[in-house]
Amino acid sequence: MAIRPNKHEMPVQDPKVRARNFGEVALGYDEKTAVAEAQRCLNCKNRPCVAGCPVNISIPEFIGKIKTGEYEEAYKIISQSSSLPAVCGRVCPQETQCEQKCTLGIKFEPVAIGRLERFVADRHNATNEGAAQVPVSNGKKVAVIGSGPSGLTCAGDLAKKGYRVTIFEALHVAGGVLVYGIPEFRLPKAIVRKEVENLKQYGVEVDTNVVIGKTLTVDELFDMGYEAVFIGSGAGLPRFMGIPGESLKGVYSANEFLTRNNLMKAYEADSDTPVMHAKRVAVVGGGNVAMDAARTALRLGADSVHVIYRRSMEEIPARREEVEHAEEEGIVFDILRNPVEILGYRNPEDRRDPKNGFVTGIKVVKCQLGEPDEKGRRRPVEVPGSEYIMDVDCVIMAIGTSPNPLIKNTTAGLEVNRRGGIVVEESTGKTSKAGVFAGGDAVTGAATVILAMGAGKTAAKAIDEYLCGSRAK
Image (cartoon, rainbow, N blue to C red):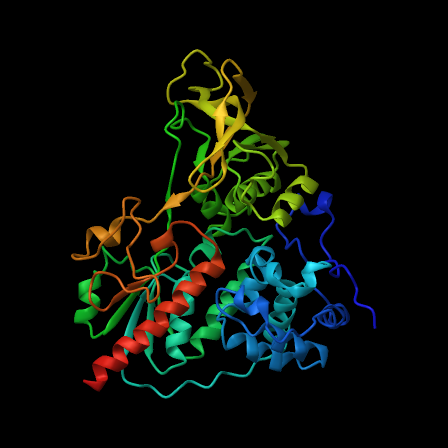
């Protein structure tokens, strides 16, 4: 049988319809399509796709089970490596990881591994109501700080080994960046809740509204009987450019803007959390967070949304799929542009007072690409005299985040780097403080969900070895 050269298309909402609702954009494969896509897998003996997966899912094996209609067996295979399959099937950048390594991709399009993972996970969540078997306790307690992807993964792996794990979450719901950072139209919050509930079946406890560094300290966790601590507190501290006008009303960090909408549901009519329903929006940045902010602003009723990015479309760091979806929905990309000032006035009746008022525009300068920087990307160089003003009433800064300094400021002996990231031993996640491990964005700064999961998995293995060694003594 001849191999189909292209992936089976993912059904999606019509762009004109979805641009005005918060329903999930991608609708998922049905059974027939999933089986047909699975048939494209060559079942390579050297399994290069597995090497491209940060959590080493046995990809050919789970796809093989789809071919034969053994969907629950496929889920079990995925779950051996991943605690969040329904999440990863939606937001993991497979195109730069497992799918990039796919042998079929040398000649044709690679197998749609992410779409198949989502199919398997969604089918399991919809049809399987049986409780997981809680492993026999080994009597040891581990504290996990943060319920984002690294924390959930670390907790799940340890719980399956018999550890009594408690996750301490600062917010009122579990999920971390999965609930406050990623919009409903990309990752429905019901999916995150289900994944968290799946972990609770293994005995993981989740304690919300606990701010480590204020409510409790890391040292106090040890005093409570926890023998190891994993810090997966993420990178929730927003960055700004330091240009004039960033204190104007109508300027948001992407973190605040998305949190108000994703976690607090500000887009709903009866929400207690206010958010600006601007008509002309500029989003500064070119990553996935910038795409999320721009597409959210559009769904809140904006007439025009512009993404301002200082490099070209070839360098834009967002997933290609997210960029394409944004373009289909009418988002405008102003590339090779860099903001230099945000303009405004105090209130609509007084345009003469420019201090601490409302946004009226953003001044940008044109750029051209110069020599490569230390990461190999060509540096944007401003073109003198090319400034112009864009009329906008809202500016969203999506230029990155840093780890919150609260934990490192209240934990003696914890080494951090100049950006505030916790310094760890890469192969184990071990920090400079005995019994404390860390991973995810708290270490690297803002990165992908799957890389954070990989770090949580690495730390769980190291914690198990650390505590087993201490028990042997």
